[in-house]
Amino acid sequence: MSHGTIASDIFSPDFEGKMSNHCNISVKLYRFSYFIDQRKLLFWRKLTMHNNNFLLSLSRLAQNQFYAIGSVYGITIISASVGQIKSAVWAKFSETV
Image (cartoon, rainbow, N blue to C red; front, side):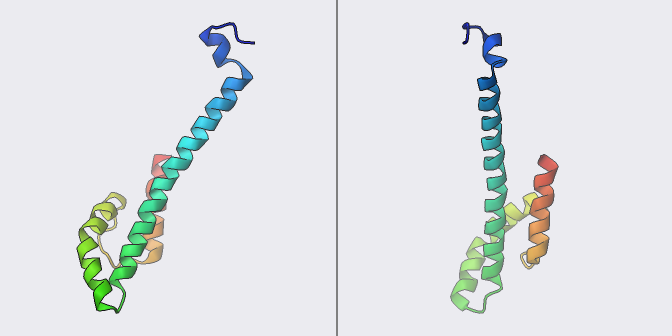
């Protein structure tokens, strides 16, 4: 049904479906990066709170990574609660949407 013009491609029903699909995919990927950061922060927090000496030494190796990602979300202490981490990540995500 397309006549080969850009206008006919843009206003076709097929184009709208493709465009909304691309937007949905990009938003899902965007949210996924926040989810990954949140999981990393929670994992590193759990390592630091563990009683095992081996895990504590591993957490010391990853402390700089925690602070690097945490600084993006305003988390400056590694002993932040799970709720604080989740709400900080959610707040940052909602700012960008």
